[in-house]
Amino acid sequence: MSGASQGTSSKAKKIFETKVRKGLKKSVYKARTTPLLVGFSGGADSTALLMSLKSLLPESQPLCAVHVEHGLRGSLSRKDAEHARHVCQLYGIDFRCEHVRVSRIAQLGLEGAARESRRSAFLTVAREIGADTLALAHNMDDQAETVLMRLFEGAGVRGISGMKWRTPFSSKGDDGFHIIRPLLNVSRKEILEYLEAQSISWVEDEMNADESRLRNRIRKKIMPVVREHIGDAAVSGIAKSAEISAPLISLMDELSRDLSAKFIREDNEELIAFPLREVKELSPLHRAELWRSVLDMLRDESPAHARRRALRKWIEDLDGLAMGDKPSGVLSLPGGLVARREYDRLIFGCSHMESKLLEEQRLRIPGKTVHHSLRLEIEASCGFTHHTKGAWEARFDLEKLGVDACIRTRRDGDRFRPLGRTKEKKLKDYLIEQKIPRASRNRIPLLTAGDKVAWIIGHQVSAEFLLDGNEKQGVTLKALLENEDSKFLSSLA
Picture 1 (cartoon, rainbow, N blue to C red):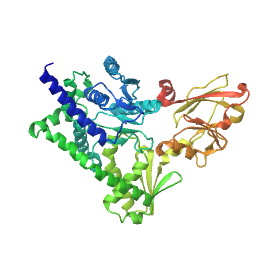
Picture 2 (tube, rainbow, N blue to C red):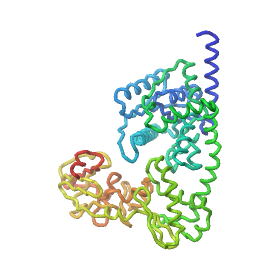
Picture 3 (cartoon, one colour):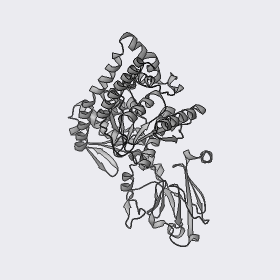
């Protein structure tokens, strides 16, 4: 390489890394001794992010590149994983390849299911190595595409604010884990120039050319027209608009918290908006923020794009229910929830359809028990077993369990004794501590003996029912949910 070429390459590297340093500052990230996770697909964006972080951060800052292999592209997926591994070996960066199984859930779609699988993989690695931050390679072009996508979906101010420099990993921000995006002020063109200047290779995901995906259509069809007729400044302008709106979103969040504190209370696992006569005096904007806050508290687990598309309608329908002249009414909400108007109150809770899940099913010992409403199968075996595996298998004292053990869902007042505790605990408190979404709590299967909970199936066994005597008096229970085994699916058909 000539001296002039070396100078150009050095300048491109310096300019790019200066922007990344500013991005780290905007992301409120400082070097520390705990590892920084970096999402690393091996593509151009994530490669530029990883290389710039390696260059900018001190040697005392551990980096861990996490490659999530979905297995959706066969040998091509494996080839990308090997490329990512090779890059990390070459530059002395800790590498983790997480192989995930993408469940083709209709509600999420393949793309959404893959996204959720990645999130789960990142969180798993973070917990294993003690990381509290994940760096992702979303750039300025991604931001512009995101804003346009949300505009086309009919999003409001929150939607067009786009991606943030720093966000909590969970919607509630209660796990202490954050995502940072240090490349939001860097264009895709600058990323490619940075890599080419250093002769660093990357891989291309052919799925990025799939124009059945809205983002790819915007990238391939719309953005080139924007650049041709308006120029590259249009892309940075769209991204700048998103950033300018961020302080407004903070004010709206503060307003939502204040409104929730004034008008929303929790009673017996339900949220209650009260009094409606005062809610009616609020402006439409304030009421919309109040209903949005309630929907957030209900922790709907539908995919983000689906929530954005439906959110306006849910808010309008809730406002109609609250502002109407009828003293009673019912509105269906996502996640099997409903809003009920009872005079001066709106009550948010489970639909009456959930009541059929409360049916008890007597446990067969020994034998197989199927609870069709819960789509759950439990196999009971009285044979000798040294160990049980996972949260879906447990061993109990047969005498303590008794002959009237049943499978059901929770009821008011349910209690159990956690392992290592001498006193009982309210089941409600346990589920809240475990961050089980409100909409899911009434669908968690329980094994009960009389009025006591012996097993929160898939979670924890009550210490009161554990086997502590003669092994011959034990019974091993293996639970299986419908979506975990095709054989069980056929047994329910």
